[in-house]
Length: 358
Image 1 (cartoon, helix red, strand yellow):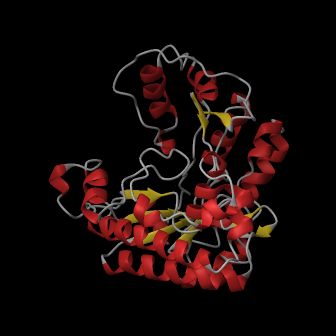
Image 2: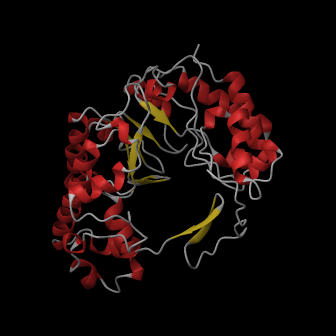
């Protein structure tokens, strides 16, 4: 099999033309780009997108069944917001726990089956085998236990470690209990659930595992280095080690500014980092030769529709791409529904013209 250009870039050997990895949430832009109403003809629209912008690799629906357009406004009270062609929302831990005492009494291992908790990764963690079977059906049976060599086949997890208590308890309760002695037991139990998951991932026919954990915010770390070195980084090293022993590479994903913890994550065994434009990607490229890096593009600049600003942004991204064979063009976090189609078109078209390493 010919090595996929995304595979090459993940591995730090990106081709001359810089590859895109865009997290797409803008069907209205698709309508603008194709002239086909996405909501009336989602399959036809995606087929045309594949012709015009194959670098996006957007999935094509099996049927052309019309989709009801989502509401334009978010319901902030219910944590509901527009996400692509749907409305996405979840309840944090405040839906399940009313006090710190209740939270500290919780046993993740006794719960194990989280399929009825939409605020966390909604899977049954009762055993490695259950998790393996849940994920294995996503991949062709003929692959067996190994992805095709050179393919970018991947699997992802949203709750690598830090997101478990954050989503389970919600921000306020998490911050109230995260320094308590009993919190150590809770984190040990969450870690055991994830050992089952990562053992299952090690058996899957994938070459990459995308491990998401929002350990930072726009201004940097949420928790101190001491706290992270106690509860998070040792687990990363353990989990990533399981995957690397099985011949898989880890891509770490976090929203916010990763400057303070990028080196720690890489030391734990990650192949690279995808984050947001608050992160200094050029610094990572200088310190970690040809590591995978993505997310430098700024959706706020796209949303402005200012072509000069978009051009400047792309030119800056290309500068970073010339520093690293692991760089991908990527708007940090995603391209949301409220970015004008004209701006998306200019970004994609100018990138096609300018995004070359040499």
